[in-house]
Amino acid sequence: MQIDENKFFREVSIRMCGSLEIEKALSSCFRFLREVMPIDELMLVVYDRELGSTTIKALADETGGWSCSEETPLPACLRKEFEDVEHYGRTRIANAFDDPIISHVARRRHWDESCLLVNRLVVDGIYVGALVARAIGRNRYTDEHLHLWTLVNEPSAIALANNQQYREISRLKDLLADDKSYLQEELRNRPGSRLVGGEFGLKRVMEGVRMVAPLMSPVLISGETGTGKELIANAIHDNSPRRLAPLIKVNCGAIPESLIDSELFGHEKGAFTGAYDQKRGRFERANGGTVFLDEVSELPPLAQVRLLRVLQEKEIDRVGGATPIKIDVRIISATNRHLESLVAAGLFREDLFFRLNVFPIQIPPLRERKTDIPALVHHFIEKKSRQMVLPTVPTLAAGEIDRLTAYDWPGNARELENAVERAIIVSGGRPLMFGDVVSGAIGRPDTAGAGSDATSTLREGEARQIRHALEKTMGKVSGAGGAAELLGINSGTLRHRMRKLGIPFGRKGTMQNSQVS
Image (cartoon, rainbow, N blue to C red; front, side, top):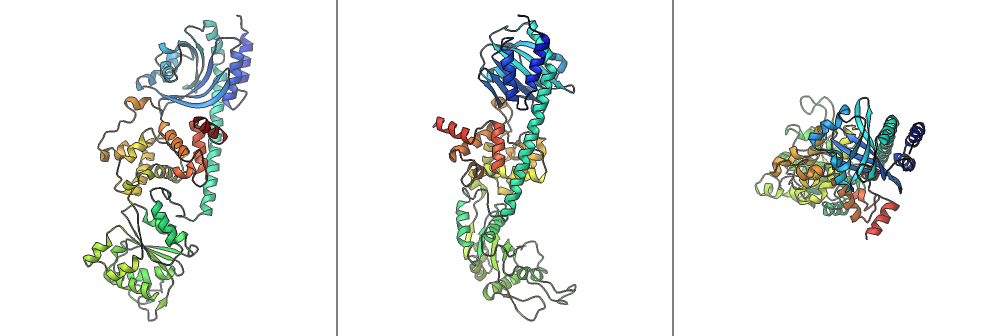
């Protein structure tokens, strides 16, 4: 069959560059190509040099075109050849299972024996992807087909570049929408109004918060270092009638004993050397609000006596003052030590302990609520991404959640947050891995990326977590009890990730769930 080269070039170029939605462009191109050459499938492939993997971004066949995200990691031994533009040239014919590179994709996609026309796309001398035509059977393409395929190399590269820019603009649009949603949420909610894990591992803690928040009763929060005692204090204050008044925080262990009276209760001008002006103390500044005494067990004996008077008499004396000052404060205290043992040892006043311990709240360590780890990890990734002003929110490598939940986290959520920050710093834009962070503590070497893991998709772990959350919430993405809340991330961010991973939601997701059930 004689084919007009000019018509072929014009038709393919117009169809490939005729839409920013590449799946539509491929579908239109496929309809023309099947009239002039053997073809059962047309695909656009993108190559990631950093990850050393190929990703099929869009496909078209006789049923139409659609976008996808099928990623295939390549063995390190093949990447150098793969990136060598001159080694394979711009176009070639290959039988799928004979080609050392294409065979990886063929096995992964369970192809029948196939012949392919490969159009390698190069931008500024760098291989970025390929336009591939596939026909079932061996040796289906001729030199004439190869010549025609060479004609459309540049239009195909332009189409890929346009699509990549379009995707980047869409991604930035989603990020801006997500940032806007986040900022609006921050304006609507005071810090501490919602805790990651509040519906799961911290459910009992939050039930206690809801019971005691509306009252004036003193609260004693106990828990190991890094469990989030300050966040619970924030939640109590923010859900109390005092939420519009000050919440004054005092780290009792960080104030020198010689200054603690002045810091807590204030001083009058001339009360001691260096007291050049009158100063209000923390309790006076918190009048009408809440005082949070962190690490209250570190208070020295004399300060314990004065704190007891505040609780009993609702008044304070400034250092050097002659007149008591009436105050109205609620006291929330916290400690990582066993106060009963300190009382028994004579290191903490028993009467003060009973005054502070009216409503005790015990925060379980992270090792006892490992179901919260996935949500905490995603929360910290989002948080650190904003703090570091990253262009994209990092994803997790496959199997990393299992690695993290296998570790007991002696430093609790604070240690996990620091581990996430370190992983982001060393990731270099790749999916996050925690082998160097926790492998020593777990007692097993980092095997991610080796053996069978090397053939799994880098996004498989994240997709599995999202699908698991959707199953638990019956497909509900946003709102109370939705998958976004379960995972501890913004609903807009979750939808963006679902689109990126090819996970349906909305009406499509509901239809798929009903078919599965």
